[in-house]
Amino acid sequence: TAIKVGIIIGSLAKASINRKLAGALEKLAPEGVSFSEIAIGNLPLYSYDYDADYPAEGRALKTAIEAADAILIVTPEYNRSIPGGLKNALDWASRPWGTNSFAGKPVAVIGTSPGAIGTAVAQAALRPVLGFLNVIQMNQTEVYLQFKPDLIGEDGAIANADTAKFLGDYLKAFHDFAIKHKG
Ligand code: FNR
Image (cartoon, rainbow, N blue to C red; front, side):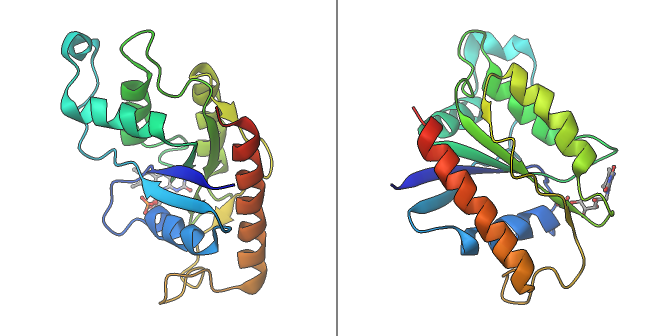
């Protein structure tokens, strides 16, 4: 079964290692899984003042999330939490009240950082937010990936065969999860 995965990258940095990871994951995606990025970098800072007349950026974000069969969030850890830009996007998607675009959506979380625990704390911070957004979370497999310069080769692919196998299996599990839980 084909599934459309919306990719949200938590980093706004041009040289983002999480953007690189998202690219490497796309290369490992099982047949039938298509990735398309849902951009979050052009959103204003959310306030409920916008609710009466939601701007185009907010509407586009909501439409893209609603159109995806499942969402994969690829996020760095900033100061032991998720980046502000990602939280801002989640807030935009959740509103106006009663129109939460994430409700019932299958969502998985992954990320990489140079630190030894590889975004574990950010992922732990993100999960209760996703719980409140009433998504269906993929709880297993968890991926805590330490970023080293040789993780991803010049070709943009995961260099190590064991790591590539692990991440390929993760994406297969995500594919199965998305098929089971998509609306
Ligand atoms: C970081 N970094 C970081 N790393 C980590 O493992 N835990 C952390 O709490 C933080 N905190 C943090 C805060 C801020 C503001 C920055 C800019 C960075 C380092 C971070 O993992 C590294 O810069 C990565 O390159 C971030 O991923 P992206 O943005 O390149 O995808």
